[in-house]
Amino acid sequence: MASNFLLYGSYGYTGSLIARLAAGRGLRPTLAGRDKNKLAAQAAELGLEYRAFSLEDAAALDAALSDVPALLLCAGPFSRTSAPAIAGCLRTKTHYLDITGEIAVFEAAAARDAEALAASVILLPGVGFDVVPSDCLAAHLKRRLPEATHLALGFQTLSRVSRGTATTMVESQHRGGLVRRGGALTPVPAAWKTRTIDFGRGEVKAVTIPWGDVSTAYYSTGIPDIEVYAAFPESTVRAMVASRYLGWLLGLPVVQNVQKRLIQAQPPGPTDAERAQGMSLFWGEAQDRAGKRAASRLRCPEGYTLTALTALAAVEKVLAGQVAAGFQTPSKAYGPDFILEIEGVTRSDAD
Image (cartoon, rainbow, N blue to C red):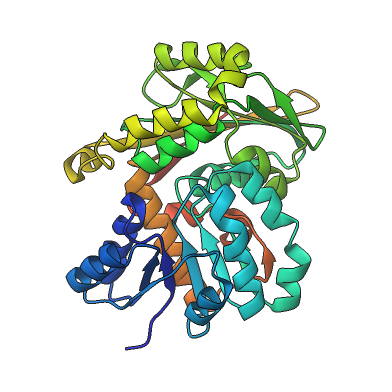
């Protein structure tokens, strides 16, 4: 049977969840990554084909993309992997999807919109936990309050992070925060603002973070002022505040390498049982110039489970020909209600 799509980074924590789910649904992704031994073992287990190569090897990448309609990139940090992958997709006219949450990656993809249009391919980054639920929530709030000028989004996760997520966090911990002001990405200190939010389980404190929606929600809604909040333990918030003064130290390669070694000594990510018991909660509020507000919430499966479900749902839509060429966000491509197609997701509105 011919391959449906190329799954690069298939043996990573999240990639492996997606590979297993895809195989269970009868899809035939070609597994890909740099480590031939890991790929061979995974391919044997799932009964799939594989290709081992580096994304920096343009010839090998083009060859791997030549006989598939789409690429789903799951290997991060995406600040390093997305550029060569997108370039390969544009050369070979292959649809591009990834599970990034990195603002710089979204902005770089948006900058290649004209090239994607010319190649008749979709550039669809952020088809996981980052940013499908929050992006769909932003678009839903824009639908509820069309004249909105301010948007606040937030999330609370009830599970731990994978090694890959932790590594990406380490690499960006010295860069501070970002918000949208007047449509422009605006640097702010880490944990710049604090807000009390009820995600559906009672009020908790949340702080601003440079989440992907600071980029994507602007493209999805046109709302010029955007902030994203997350609820963290107090110890994490204190560390974020401290990073305002220690950013120069946290950015040093020797410091980051020590942190990454500690991360690699940890389990790959939540166990199947932990994922089954976890959940993720999202909140958003839009406001217009007259002070009118609209708020909505989402209750979703655990974050990594949600990523596997939303990423594969997006891939299946692309494979079915539901493609709008150019740079897209999840809600621009598939509407505000795309997230409601995912099993276990509920949405509620408030004034």
